[in-house]
Length: 351
Figure 1 (cartoon, rainbow, N blue to C red):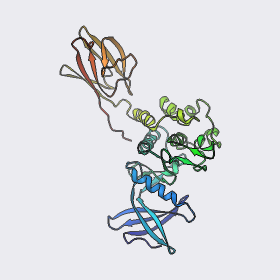
Figure 2: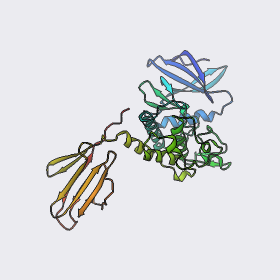
Figure 3: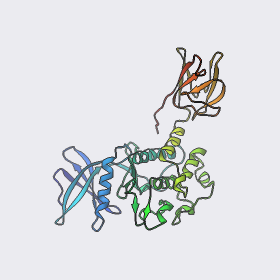
Figure 4: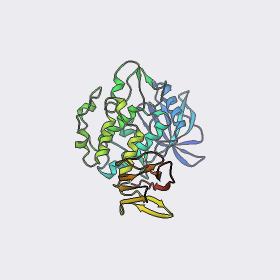
């Protein structure tokens, strides 16, 4: 095999399901890279799909495409992708510790999938073997050989994927249309397999069936109830009933930041802090109204109201969650009003 002089093989190579991998050094930039080529007999579309998708994506949780080159192999020209080399370890079944490590790993994967979905891409083969920790324990999602763009591109005439992670709608007809909900389904299954190989038999069936209610609570006893509920909803047999990755990421992030949020309430040049150390506050405007807010470690919840109080000029009720950044307005529209800012800090999620 003849490579461009820029790429010097290191002697390490391997083969995946559809592609051959050669580890090289980019001698111009002095960095390790990976060359990926299709195995003989595989459809060239696989590499084209991967190239097309990776050009669109920029995310700390997605492998980066550096270059597309032509190599000489046995007298034939072949296209190869030059990819980011990720030193680290692959995820696998049962490879993640339960508890905080599991929650943090799921959140990182959710961040990567959210970035992928926001670019209008469907991965189609989410599973532990296609995800890796780098040396800084940052999750990287790999192998976009089956990926498609949403819309007219999201169709297939054959069932392709990894059994156990494939959504039930992929088994329903010859001409199969799909959307990002198939990635959400695979993510839900993987939330179990990362910590255990005792996946409910219903999910391993072809096509997968509905899991008995409470299955995820039994299998994931170390995770908060609303996290478990979100993960279980990911494997709903009806794709329309599955949550978006945006919702799942938000639920996971909220629990990783438990008791770490801080809200500042500014009233008449005085600033009041609402936090785990001081979780309750009452804000009052004389003869107009008052509002009481409690921080429960996850959200800032309205616990009491009186008089005319609005949030961002809209009505508010007891039990509602305050937005992260809003203006509390005291007084009806036809009278002089007082305005109070409510601003929630967003701490960084750390392992």
